Image (cartoon, rainbow, N blue to C red; front, side):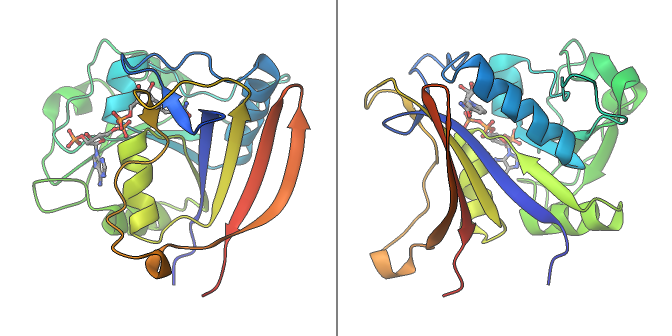
Length: 217
Ligand SMILES: NC(=O)c1ccc[n+]([C@@H]2O[C@H](COP(=O)([O-])OP(=O)(O)OC[C@H]3O[C@@H](n4cnc5c(N)ncnc54)[C@H](OP(=O)(O)O)[C@@H]3O)[C@@H](O)[C@H]2O)c1
């Protein structure tokens, strides 16, 4: 039984795309939705993205609320091969709060020297999500906001580790060549698709925020 509460946040177009084919994703949703996203960051102990998102967007991942939170959430990147560039905004902002790179087992002297915590979670190929959750719990984290991208989100959904989905939708259409909100889930029939129960629906300007929790099956 896990104690870490995991929320998956998605900011998509109406047709469920989180980026254009070239990876551009800023800004699909409105500034009001993004402000809510910062609020969500402030309410969680930690924020996580995949290394694909860091390489595409170079995010800072801090909670920029007014006023600022008393403490910044721990910022975590799933980074099996320790590819996090030391010149990235994430790696260069450890003075703002703890930054963690989760590898598939290897350490990284370069990242450690840059003040980044390296958690080794896996068998050498890819970060193991279950092992990562156990490590996060052992580190005292109680809540985690996963912000994508597509590949990392699919891993946590497939592993049944997501408790809640916060899905922001903007009234634009990106089309089939855009990046889907979720990578492959490997379903062979609909019966094995996880069911989600809607618990809230809110208009934020022209955007919509739908919140779902996992249905017991
Ligand atoms: N609109 C939104 O809500 C939103 C949010 C975030 C990102 N995005 C967009 O999404 C795109 C990036 O998505 P992406 O799918 O290419 O990359 P991603 O999900 O951010 O990162 C994927 C990478 O994470 C690493 N990883 C480590 N452990 C993993 C695991 N257990 N499962 C899955 N991945 C793991 C893998 O690289 P290693 O094997 O090297 O570790 C993998 O290639 C960008 O265009 C970004 O702008 C949009």
